[in-house]
Image (cartoon, rainbow, N blue to C red; front, side, top):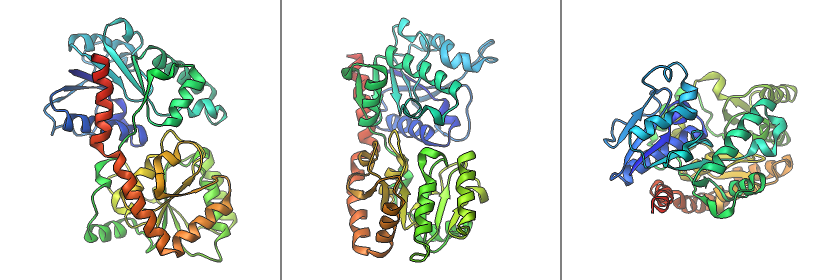
Length: 379
């Protein structure tokens, strides 16, 4: 098959959507080399190097007006390129497919990661909510098949857009393979010096936004300040909510216990993440709602215990490798942190169970699940 992807985020996104796109494309090209893969992107970058794959081809706007109106090319005009390349199937990797692709005869698949903006519209710009709703709903209605990255997301698609259940397939995602391999002690020492990491630390990775719930973690650390002297390292950017968190940190004298690492160092890629994860005491990820929660899976592969939420899809991501808490209960989070720090048997048990559970999300298995969706569509 000739399979095309919306690869904008594979090249230009450093967070979850970018990681999903890069990992899936690379896995498909590796484990299913008999197919040709075409990456449609308005612009390329050095974030995704496909030179190792002879069966991967980059497609960018080549002629006016597409070169001047790249957004229009991606959202609609790319159909001409797809037809000229004899594309059999198009996969929108992040909530969108080209408008009108259903009229071309080209089969289409869309991955829906989450519908968080539908659940929590007040946390988004009202105009953005309208744009997202139009794009997501169009993709769900007109795609031949929908891939949901969790059971929770599948339920949301059915609830909010009234899509028939039989049209939706749950295909879990893999994380970057760099998290699977053990980092050498030499590399750990180098990374520790590079980022001036503490000897022991809890770890938070993710955008600093209200839904990710960093403020409640800080409240837990404040409750523990006379019992535990282990800082929290934060990797992630934020805006107004981050300022709210920082105000709490300052007001409670937590500046030495809360380390905003992204303010001191630039994280344009996740290349150093495995070495950071593998030196942490625990990943703390009590998000209020997620599409999947990839840092949880990254932690399990890194043999890192996880404290995460007992709601949304997070039990799907963590399995038996996590301690589950009410995300809005700072006392529960504090108790879980104290247990991880003081109960070695518990920590070791979580590491073993987490590693075992992570085997369900191997890149080859995740690629196979997606390829089966393609093959079933093409008959």
